[in-house]
Length: 140
Image (cartoon, rainbow, N blue to C red; front, side, top):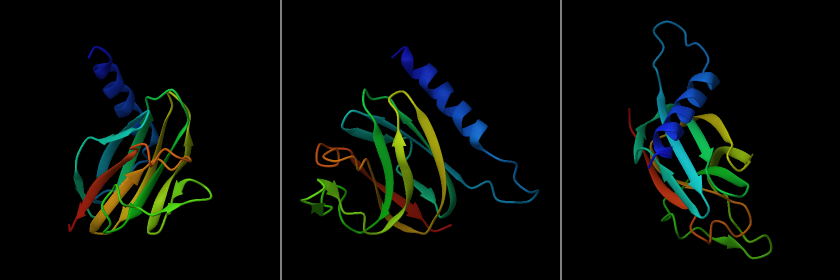
């Protein structure tokens, strides 16, 4: 529990450092904080409003992870798997981060339309081990 405040401060600093100045009168957009541990993905909120969304991802795990955002009506644990690569098929992919080193952080800003999404790690075998979560984008 003592690490939690330090982790939150790190994520807030990451989001602030990665952000650019917005024009006067521009909507602030949404922010999402995602944490990855070995074989688990968590998000600070279950949904955001449609539009520009900044996603800060922190890899708290002991190994490299990826981060993918897929727009799909499929349940988060029912994505089809490619038997050759041992990765989830990325139908509906709207963006992501190719790799995040252990202890590292990264961010991506995506324009998200209303609907259902799945957030996953798609390193071979990681999706099947539980690295997935449902996420919803609500109409503005």
